View 1: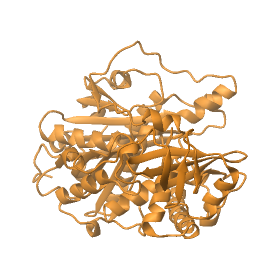
View 2: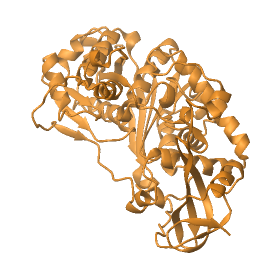
View 3: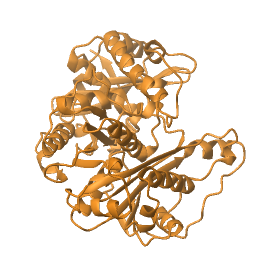
Length: 490
């Protein structure tokens, strides 16, 4: 494209890899999976030379022991690229594309390889069989660059009260979102299950999905031997799935590097805009539990920078670890929750490889947009507990004003916060809640309690109360927080 500025960033290659051998010991290690995904991305671009000429090799952090996997990959491809390793967070892949696009546009990079992989499924099963998949040993070394900031996202009080993992927080958000819409428990469960059925259908058509078994809304909604309740109202089929072996890679380069490598112009995908921003590190301090100021500000700003409105966006992939994440993001960006909001099938069905899901979503979006030339696609990325966010808009058309990016944190930080009232005992009101289940049924009811001074976290093991919490709306109910930080109804 001779009319395009030579420094324009273009995504030219997208590759994905999946393995599920009958004998898990026959699986290849994550490093080899990364190589496979990068080679697939180069083949997608029609230019293996991109791997040899890469100026930067960036790896999304994963659950493996390599200290600088970019260096190992660089050595395999024989390039002299600078290596980078991300910090943790599902927002990371889109943030890396944003960063790569800026550096390319500014002349600080020419060809950036972005890749991640997880081999959790094979490693766990090999270990159960008393076997071990050989991993490449790497002497303690550091990447040329650490990409991103490490953020502590769990307050000690949250942890000690049982709010320790995503499976605890996201159903809490779900109940708050339900109440914000004025839905009954049954209406809400039906609607969310129908939404997740659409995600399942998309996953079944995606060759890189980990789960491709068709499920109806009823099968997703109703607990059963293979689909137990986890955190009410979520069954297993509504939870993120990271027990898998998947890899994905992207190649982002300058327009002049793409031309020099011989990449055909019909492979070019243009990042239009990108934004980054975060909600409060601790959920305890959120303004409320049914919204996300960071998504509202950064998501809408990404559209503004690209010169599009929600109705102009043809294809969407929202980060989908749990239904609440999808609904909150769609609402904050005014996309609506009744349209197709995934291109992969989401983290339940397509798979949620820890920090690397969005590499898969962008790779999938690349194919969708190439098949629908001139259309616009949006990818969102989410780390933590609806905490860290990144957004990107893409099209086969070059951006009118070049790639535009904004860090939206200053605007987000002016949103009022709630104080954690950790020592509070006395009367309060349930703001949001869930009931956590084990294999034998309900184990612990968890609730966010609004107090006269802020927010308190409390729980209950009362079996009758837990049953009531799952059949009758308890948001808005008056409770007493007791000395042991359990709660009971007034």
